[in-house]
Amino acid sequence: MSVYLDNAATSFPKPEEVYQAVIHAMREVGASPGRGGHHRSLEAGRIMFMAREAVARLFSIADSSRIIFTHNATGALNLALHGTLKPGDHVITTSMEHNSLLRPLHALGRDGVDVTIVDAGPEGLVDPDQIARFVRKDTRMIAVGHISNVCGAIQPIDRISAICHKAGAMFLMDAAQSAGYINIDVVSSGIDLLAAPGHKGLLGPPGTGLLYVAPHIELKPIFEGGTGTSSTSLEQPLMMPDGYEAGTHNLPGIAGLKAGIEFILDRGIDTIFQHEHSLVNQAARLLGLLPGVKIYGPGDPESRGAVLSFNVEGVDASLLAAELDHGFDIAVRAGLHCAPLAHRTIGTLPGGTLRMSPGWSSTSEEIAFFSDAVVQCVGKIKESM
Ligand SMILES: Cc1ncc(COP(=O)(O)O)c(C=O)c1O
Image 1: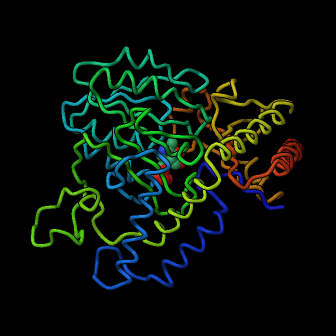
Image 2: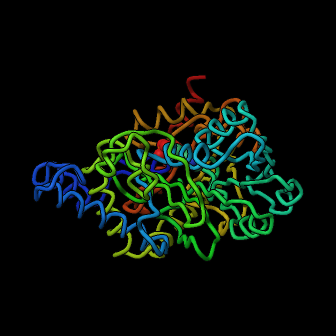
Image 3: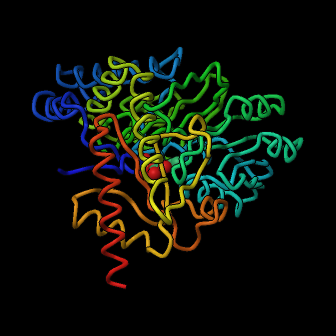
């Protein structure tokens, strides 16, 4: 058995339709959208449009032209932050964030943006009242990850966005671990900027991501170049979405992303959620029976996404991940998962955690196999100590 439980890093396998869509874009379409009047370029443009429409349907976005394709969630977060913030602005974020949010904020901090990092509790949950305490007159943005990639904590985003809007600030949500897993409605959750990778829960290929920008948000492009529009002007066009997607698109990637999202829409996001949620709970139950295992994150399964982090007392997480890989062909991830402050928050510095994250195609048998393998690997490691 080959078991892939690293869907929080990137999802694998993809639905068959995704592979077919990538091959079709490469073999049969072959051209770039907006870069010619021939039928191949027009077909590429049609695929792009349909991909944007699929994203819009998934997140209840009224106007699909407000969706900008990027290369990953990091690209979307950088565009959201560098494209809206200026010196003198105040931003609130949390200690549970990924470096893809914290590093651009740190860089902006050097340029005069004032950043407040609110500590989450030891289970990784952010208390909205703590966020409210730090709101000031000059607060322009609250930026929060929906689900922690370290311990799976699902943040109370509706309450946080309400605080944000009361303060007249923008709400940026990093949906890297929630897009394609949990239902997201940008209108009812008051999301002004939504950053998501295409290659995780949305089941698209690597090299895809997106940023949704609400109609009232003004965004500055963070790089300039050819857009296939307004070509006589040296000024970067500010038209959505072209002005923010300069350069040749990753059409095979976006075609695959379209197929991935259509798969999710067909299957139903609630079905996917129930499936992954039950697998994570099964893993938590089985691991919880093992001696010396400590599971991190919310104790209440309702507050935990499809990400489970744990450690085994006296066993190095990286060593255990390597044993699971070499001995059992099980792919999990050990370490800090690019979120050092989250580990400080949940008390797992410096070694980090072992993280397992099932996906749409994971099975209950695989989870049982994984749990048995952990027992055997721990035994082997302890014997050799
Ligand atoms: C919470 C979170 N934010 C951002 C990212 C960055 O995503 P990407 O690799 O698509 O840039 C990740 C990736 O693991 C993540 O888990």
